Image (cartoon, rainbow, N blue to C red; front, side):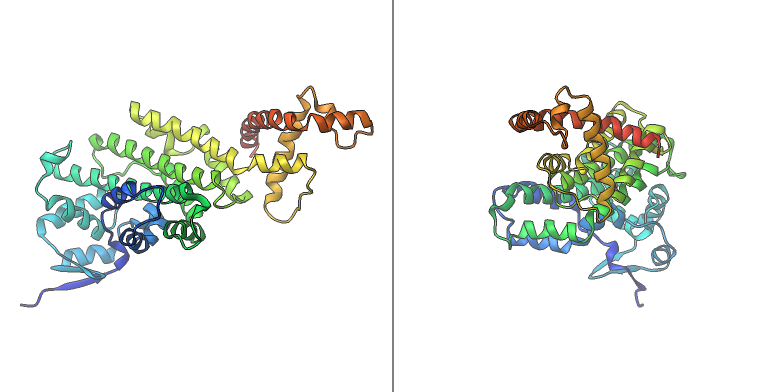
Length: 368
């Protein structure tokens, strides 16, 4: 008797990210990646770019394949559908709003081992799969973060053909920044799954907040190391996200229901504010103002320029030395004093700008 086989989208398959993360963490930070590990990164490149968004929502095609087939073909991989695992996969899918085939992959992968009680702090099979799902998502994000950190640690000391540098730059080129912000918006507005038991809500809330922080870590890393420039539109989107966390318009704040979740919530708010400040690239703009380098009003950075000049204006207004910094001051002696104090004023005013920008971001939010 022929076995009923159904093919589904090959993008539904993934190899365990926990083992890949271990390989990345064990790689020497002072050397380029070994060939086998570099090959794994290339094979998982699409996952690194799309991040957790590559875990799909339930759909009829996947459900039909699971219900009516004895085998499911996912690219080069094949799964034999077991009735008891299928039922658990459908339950997991309803809990997590996860594609039915991907839910089955989780069930098959982590219940087949038969070591549920020994290796996990929870003993219910469904709870084990849910916990492992969150671990997989976080390991995926940590892999992306580790790739960027490894590439940045090596810096410019390597040749252009460096494998880790090539992968990091390709992630940025293929749109990692925009995808992360989209994922952040989804995470901050997500609601408690209706089918999830109350006793699982705390686990779900804590793990979701951990993901928020991992996404924010990567975004901060991208801007801090100037891997790409934050446009005004993106900056405004981030600012609106921050506004939502302060006003409570996102479900994000409702997840802080345990000490661990509350700590993650506060950390995420601070990290988001730091990202808003870092994305303005204040140090570079301050040097341009002090060196009298003209700005070009070309693209969306015009918004950032206006914002920072306003911050600089407020800062100088409160400085006791601001009279020496007036660009059109006709007094030669004051002009000379301005030159001699230039280096000291750069440092003091930069610190003041950081303080005022934090306040201005809040003011901007209130009037947006």
